[in-house]
Image (cartoon, rainbow over all chains, first blue to last red; front, side):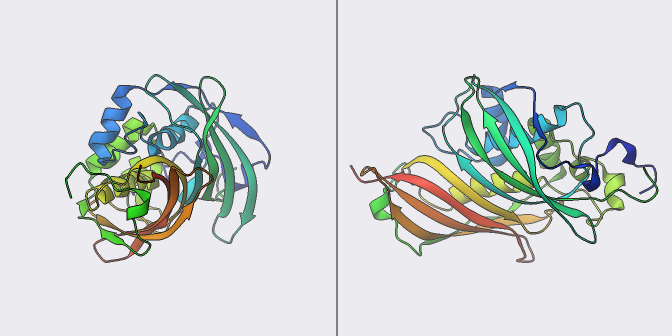
Length: 142
Length: 149
């Protein structure tokens, strides 16, 4: 993996259990919904303006706007997700995440994070747990 | 059954099965999803870096596969009278690579009455398969469905 920007990535060893982060906010627009419909053909639940999976998709990108080195994710393993209330176009969401458990394996380590998406009123609209496989720091980079 | 008819909780039976048509996942799908979601992880966007990874090439976002199967399944069944989605339990079992063709198989795993008489909870078990019939994603979704008025 020579030439890869390893120094700009956070590794399994860097994850601190209990540390929580909150992302910047994003207003969900008709344009997001149209792009999502066109790409996925997922019309979601017609009574809710925003398809249920769209906020989840957008929240993964919000995490990239945090001013910190992105985690060296080897694989997204699972998600356990609860949908508490619908969103409409014009609502503004942000995401909160907290590392709750990690387990070292020979190749990388498993990380469990709790995620919560909140709207402009501070209400949790969706929440749950993500499980990732994270790379360990390569011996060459420190 | 009319194309726009919605099926009520009472009309859905445990054990019903659905299988969707296939869809070939393209590089374009992945690029658009990265742009829409803002998830530019190297797993999905850096072809050179991914040559040295366990996958050997870029892979689709797990959530792109999840969203696509939702769209695919809606083409394989008459819509339920859904009030809301309540929960998702989902495992990403293997990579979806550029050029792979996925489809979804689903089965009504459970029906449960709720505290409100006008709605019930349907649990759908889903498997996303690739062109080699390997399960790349699987899980369960809980849907709140209206009872017949």
